[in-house]
Length: 362
Image 1 (cartoon, helix red, strand yellow):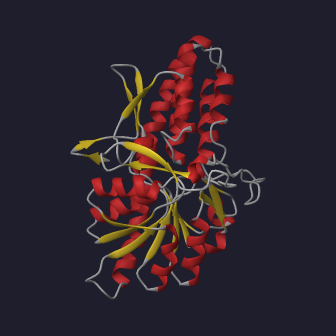
Image 2 (tube, rainbow, N blue to C red):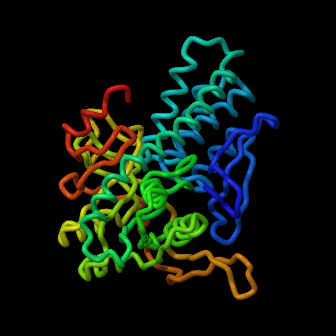
Image 3 (spheres, rainbow, N blue to C red):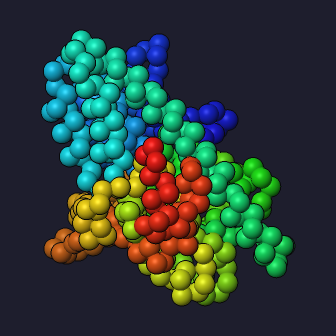
């Protein structure tokens, strides 16, 4: 992604310094800061505190976390993997990445583990960039068809997205927003309706910021406005990301995604999910009801972060002190509401057959 004329990734390895660096997303859009990760504990904190977030990015960060752990103590492979796995339960990329690292280290002497982990982490970083770019390319065909079918060529193609599935959710490009970026490159006039995405407001704080930096027209809306816009004919297509998708095509994504899918279905609007194959849980035991849904702290709901009139970053309470609060981080959209899955291997149906066609080499 381009930020003030300079290219950044959400995570990168600095060979000269032997260091792992991230964009700290907890300060955005008010503070753009990068941080160095030097220990396993810092990598775990980055994931748990959502300095990094988004399924693809979490996976790559976990791989680098294993390197940092093994660089300090090559004997802590098992405990380091367990610590990283415990940070966030829903995104399947976390387990996928740790399984890849464990596979690469199998049978290696302790002295060789750190180097092997670093090599794989760097490979996964590069793979994620290529994968997300390919997702974007696969999705452009869909948007081109929708644009050609659109009667009012004076209006842009209006796409609605939920949460942040952009470059900040991956190493670069992103998943749902990769489709947007590739569409803009292809000359499709596009405008994005951005759900605020309570309670952490990743749409407002991250997606609007990211799209703005890339020069993509966008409008922030409250979470409950999407259905109204669909009824008014002001949404042409919905594209969201996924933290975990089952072999039946059910999609787990940020809380509120299910409601957007219901509204899209009711109004005859295509609802696509853009995701890497690594976000698919190919376990036969994985079902919509078996996905672990993360429950986060009440503070995210009871308080809001922003800047005051002086520009100082501050947090204010918006709920009564004694309010009982529930904070589910994700929900599951049934496959029947999903028009298709946009992956780096092409667009497939959200069905067991569609998922099976992607399994080779997963």
